[in-house]
Length: 453
Image (cartoon, rainbow, N blue to C red):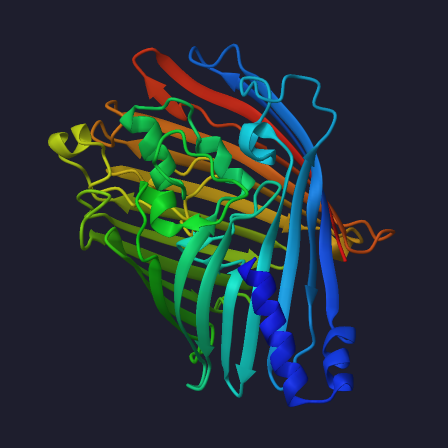
């Protein structure tokens, strides 16, 4: 209701400032946009711990957005999101048969007013406040299933300094998207399963299902209300082919997180058709204030090197986290892990599903190659990859193991239907989870059709 009130206040302000025709133009010249999405997923589990499980799901939905034209820099935007299951012939609440990542609580359909914001631009400064999508390294939309993560945030963005973007803001609420529901382990009490949630971009509070709800940032992450997350960042691109960025997230009474990344590309001296690139990233976390999440002292670094040759691109990446002691592992394993409860996943070594590179004591590698066939007459792009995660016994799982994930991603945009994207993705993790009772992997296929307008 407060967003309806906010919109009413904005309309009143504009009406009092200028004549009716100006207010009318603000809305009549606004833009409507959206996406219709169909998503099908099929996951058949492998290994002694998952031989009886075969989950699948189908859903259709997307979003419809309207943003007014600006009046003297002022504009308002809203977006409505929805997901609806179909052709699901099993008991919707049976998560051994229905994949939960396309739906809301109890695997039900749901709709939400996901965006409702006021935006004001003055010269080179923009303010945006209210419900909105965020795509930052350590807090992001993770739009990998039906509906993305959404936030209530208040941001200032400034570009007065040449080649530099400065951001300062405060994030108060988080609405988990459908992807996060894969980590809602019913009755989960083990350190391993809760830790997997914490390091995969979601809460480690067991039995929490917050899809479709905007909840306090601390309540979502650790089960206790906090003053949210304050964030500042600087991105610099003043040197040719070089981009530098640094972010600081201060989650009140939980942790402080620093993220830094550098990307550089150049022309090969031996051939003008070869364009190498390299990148490095670094994360440091420390507990702050009341230390609601317990002791946190995580560190992660990663590096990537690759090259592009016309329509072909390939790279290799490596990352490593600090290690836990045996007592830290027994206490839950979060001490030297990288915990990131609000989505966002910048790691160079992440798989399509497997995100174990943030577990303490993990050495991860990834190789990937992609080719775009557009110059051959088809708007078709293909990617294959292989990721490996070498984890020690103190990661929090209580067992040393190496998890692997090969996969592929194919996207086709037919010429006959503009703005339509057809996508087929597959991932095949092994030893994703391992305990003394056995290990779990799966073969998963996804088909996604997106029509943007």
